[in-house]
Image (cartoon, rainbow over all chains, first blue to last red; front, side):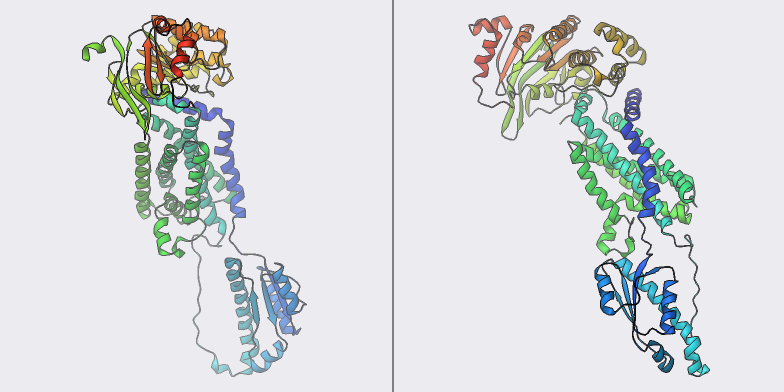
Length: 374
Length: 251
């Protein structure tokens, strides 16, 4: 125990002496947490629509006005031919092209029906499907007004069909704002990067300089050395997490709905798992470059498979199973549950089991892999 | 063997380290007496560092027997580590810690108490004449001072044996002389010194020297006897005659 005290003293001295590392640990996460959620935004806004209006009637004008005033669309050139609109799509200036044929108003009034043509640039699948969805909704709304104003006048009032009215409420994120989903995720990501990379690099750096050999030739116990490395970075991680929570509250007004104690309990266990991961990487790498690439490889997988950007439920079966094998998945899920839904300990206790499992496994492997004598 | 342990610091019998087909160290046998300054010579790539790492408990031997400070190199490595000091080829104090912080850390790691560290540390700093530099980062010191400090840290916990792997590489002649004064002082305090070097004048300072060629110990005697045996006046010449037999290429 006495020896551990000396090791911790040395580690803290080194951490607080290195201004770059300090900046990386505290300033970068704060700045990233402020910038990233604004940019990493999946909300579809400003869909560029080119309307080709061959009818030029008051109805077609009404429709165009309705689209323009819905708030999701930006109208680009609506007095052009089909050919010109196609060019706009090719040049990436327009995302959706809506073609209103000649005789639009006449057919609607006389026959009660008229087809429109909507062409969508589908390169960005999300944008195209959500954009065309919005547009379809606007059209449907327009349609309903027609039912009242045109069709019901023309046909008899008795044919009104049965219909189910649906009212809905959005829970936990009433305005469906993307930032509520994203900010907790980004916080987890930053914690992961810092926890995973900094331990790995720190130990490998000692290998590179050669001080690790000097350590290995002392009677230091394995657990003393490993705890001496883990504890300082665990504390740093908890501080980063706290800073992150503060930024989340101050900048985004998100305050955890659930218990802060439970949140910290998970963060504590998660950090242990993560530091074990960093430690494991450091035992298999001989240079900081190697460690960096190995860590980066896993980080990429963690990030894309963890449900941070995309929903795990829509992954294929194998990917979903795989994603449960990364600790990040579980922690992101828990943080969202506690922060946004206010879930209590009993609702998320399985995740704690997962995280504890990862902590044991990763640290166990790291300890087995670290050898004072080769 | 038990009886020998008391007056021998190191006993090596047919100690071998093999990497695949390559025998880095090939059945070396020698003893080192307590309090002796033992020079461990050999060309680059002759296997000195590998042998030394086995004796320090940093690497497992492939075969053979050895004991250091009475402890077995296969099973009691951690006990060996507690009773030796080691100064590696690479400078291995923390450059981003100050002189006294390094002393404090290594002293603590070897289990000294804070008060011991304080008194002995001050003593050591004044002996090295580093009084004004104690609060400076070690990275800012000149190489010669770093090496002297590194050696003093290696014997700070009063080990039975100290292993020095090319401690004076790149150091100026005056500092080398001062360095050897420190070694003599350590030896007179009863510390056994096991040192590798490429400087033949330094070899002459040793009580006995061994010369390794291609992983084997080819000669082992006092510098005077070796010169007699090889009919020459200089250790340089002894080394040339032995090293010329090498088949391996140095690194």
